[in-house]
Amino acid sequence: MSVDLKAFAKELVSLRSKEAQELAEVLEKEYGIEPKCVDAGENSPIPEKPVSRQVRRKMEREAKKRRK
Image (tube, rainbow, N blue to C red):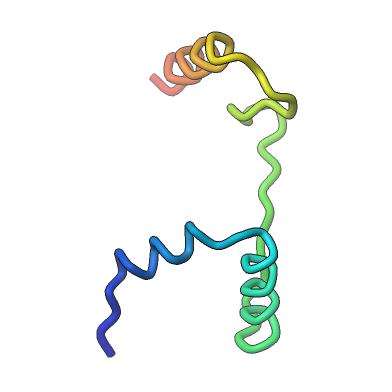
C-alpha cells in the first residue's frame, strides 16, 4: 500500500472542526485510538486571549531565550 503522505497531510490540515470531530470518533470507535489533550499550563506559548502581533512576537522571543 503506497500513500502520498503530502497529499494525506494536506487533506488532514484542511479538515473543518466537524470533520475533525467525526474523524476522532471513527478512530476511537474503529481502532481504539483516543485523543489526548495536553495542558501546557503556564509554559504554554499560546495565550488564552487574543493578543496583538507585537505582544505575540515578544512572547515568542522570550520563549526562544528560555529554550537556550
